[in-house]
Amino acid sequence: MKQRFSILSTFLVCALLWPARTSALTGSWRGELRVGQTGLAIVFNFTESDDGTTRCTLDSPMQGAKGIPTTILFCTSDSVSLRCDAVGATYEGRILADAIEGTFRQRGHAFPLHLTPEIPIEVRRPQTPRPPFPYAVTDTTFTAPDGAVMSATLTMPYRLMSTKIPVVLMVSGSGPQNRDEEIFDHHPFAVLADHLARNGIGSLRYDDRGVGKSTGDFPSATTATFRDDARSGIAFLRSIGAVGKVGVLGHSEGGTIAFMLGAEGCTDFILSLAGMAVTGKETMMRQNSHALDLAGVTGEEKETSLRLIEIVSDAVAEQSRIGVCRPIDIDSMASAAGLKVSPQIVSSLKTTQKMRTPWFDGFFALNPPAYLKDIKCPLLALNGDRDTQVDGVANTTMIRKLVPQAEVRLLPGLNHLMQQATTGEIAEYNDIRETLSPEVLDIITDFVKRITKND
Picture (cartoon, rainbow, N blue to C red):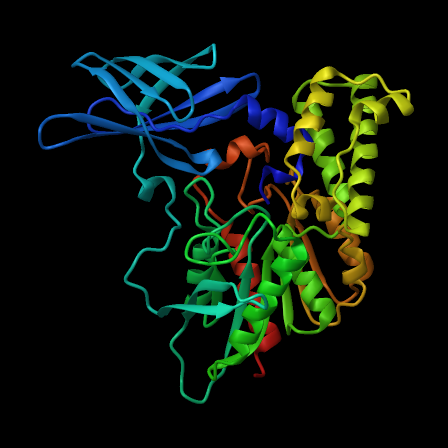
C-alpha cells in the first residue's frame, strides 16, 4: 500500500516533489537527498550520442518517476552542470574517480547530493525472475463490468492432461500499480508468480485500470471498482479448462478486496499479505500518528493535530456515505472544536482537500470487519510486525476475532512489503535487496498445496 493513506503525507510529498537520475560520463549514478529524517533517492542517467553529445535523464524511484529529461549546461572531464525544467531544479557537481560531489537546487533550496555509480539491477534485486522459465507465460486480457480491458499475465506450470491447476488472482495495493506491483525496482508479484509456478500453482496478475496496457479511468475509481475488476479476473480464470480452485491473493488494499470477494463467496480461498482488516479511518489515523512522530510532533500538539484530522476524516466519510463531495472548512472545524493546531498541519489538510478523489473519500468509510464476518472459505493472513502502514497487531487481531477458520501469522521483522526490515519505514524500502521474504513464499505455497491437494 503506497503513501496515499496519510493526510500528512501530502505535506511531506509537496516538500519533496522532485524526480531524478544522476550520472557523470556514461552510466547511472545514484544519490539521496535528505530533508530532516526523510530521504529521497535520485538517479541521473548519462549517455553519450554518436556525435559525442552528453545527454541525461532523471529518475526518482520512490516516486515512480523515470526518464525525466534534463538539459546539460556543461560537462567536462572534472565537472557537470545540468537543469531539469520539469521539476524546476539544477545540479552542479565535481567529478571524482568514483563519485560526483555536488549541490542539488530546487525552488530556492540547496541540498548536498553525493552520487556513486548505480549498482546493477541484477545485484540490487536478485529475486526478480529472469528467463528462460520452466513454465508457461501468456499475455492475455479480461474485461471489467464497465468495459475496461484489463491487460494481464497468466503464469501456468506445465501439467499432466488429467490434472487441474490451482490458480491465484493477484490484487495489488492502493495507488496505480502495474501487474508486477512494481515499487523501487522490486517486482513482488512477478517473484510470487515465479515461485508459485515452480511449485505447481498458477497465477494471473494484471495492470490496474488506466495503468500500463489496461484501459479504464484510474482517478475516478474506488475500492468497489477495483473489487469489480478483480471479480472479473476470477470469472476469466474459471473459464479456463485447466484451472482448478481459484483463490485471491491480495496485498495491502488488495487484501481488503480479497476479504470483500470472500464475503461474496466467489473465491475458493484467500491469501492476504499485509491486508487491512480494520477500518479505513483507523488505518488513516494510525498512519498520521506515525507521521507526526517522525516529524517530531509530540505531546499536546500531536493530540490536537490528530483530533482535527479525525474530525475532518469523519466529515469526509460522511460525505462519502451520502454520495457527495463538498469543500470542508478546516478553519471553522478547528475553531468549533476549540483546537489550536499548527499552521503546517492545517495547510496540509487544506492541500489534501484539494486533491480528494472518489477513492480517497470512500477509503475513510471503508469497513472491512463487515466483510470478514461473512467469510467461509479458507483464509491465510500474513502481516509483518514492523509494518508502519498497516498495523500488524491490530489487523491480525481483527482477523482472528472474525474469521475462526483463518490461519493468521504475525511474522517478526517484516515490513509492509513483506521484506525483512530494520525499521519498517517507507524510506528503507529502496535499500532492501530482498523483494519478498523466502519464508513468506514458502508459507503461501504450503497453504495452497494443502487446501487443494485433493483436487
